[in-house]
Length: 361
Image 1 (tube, one colour):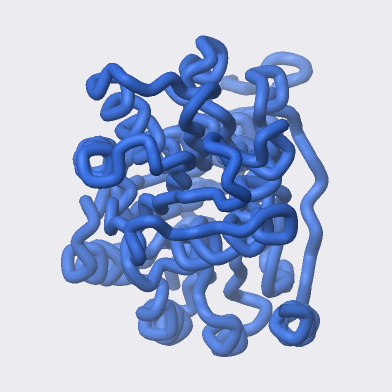
Image 2 (cartoon, one colour):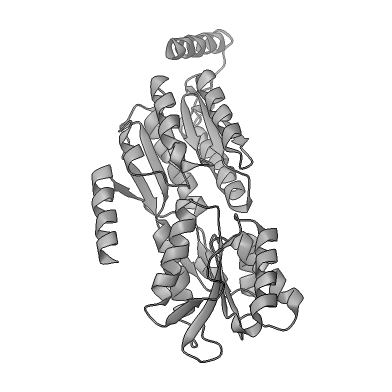
């Protein structure tokens, strides 16, 4: 019924234009010839990274409409980190009979419920940024996909940035790197894997020691990143050599804490690495106040989200996964945004790859 109504509206608009002598100029798609699609985009929180991401999604849909003559009405909502609130937002999208839902979930463990509800309403789903379990991606094959990056890669690159330093992060030369980790929200796949693989990678080159004994729960927040780093500097003094932050927001907080302490110099007797390569982090990198970061390529991910969404809107079967790569950034030029190819994988292929990765550990 929804599609029939849209077709009727399009036909009436086209008839009115012909009766009035209207029409497009040469090289343009005449008004009324394209279709109209309504897309709901649910974002976990408009933090620095997801603000860039959702703005790029809007831009990409606008560019797509200019090329194909379709109209993409994009409704983007902010859950502000509230799981219950986001559930209601997605339910509203389903009630509104959206043509497609893009979901950056507060809690990826609830992805199966989102997909089941969307499946009942026959609304394709593109999951982004926060990877759900492999099992979830089998709930509605062909109509559900995940567009993202492999979080293990970002952790590996963080570890490599420190390992490639002349000192390997070992400021005092005792053969051990004393570090702290500023961790994103508990249970988040990106947070868990960045935390794990940054250290596993560095340990291939040198012995490491989590001087605090556990991670600091920073919840991706700059203020918490500053507070936890300040506490660590007070407690451990110059024994603290490296700060691993799961994102740039917390890394920036760490830099602020170090600068306020006034007795340490980043790049000389302490090192800080983040993830995302947001503008503020790149500026700190340029000034020599950040050791490195990892580009979480919002540009390519957003472009692929829109490309994949349009495939789904056209009735095409989707692959289970569309992957992009992180980019290791030790100088601003490394973070240049340019269109890159994605890699497709099936659920079966990802299952095998993840199993092989666990065996290798």
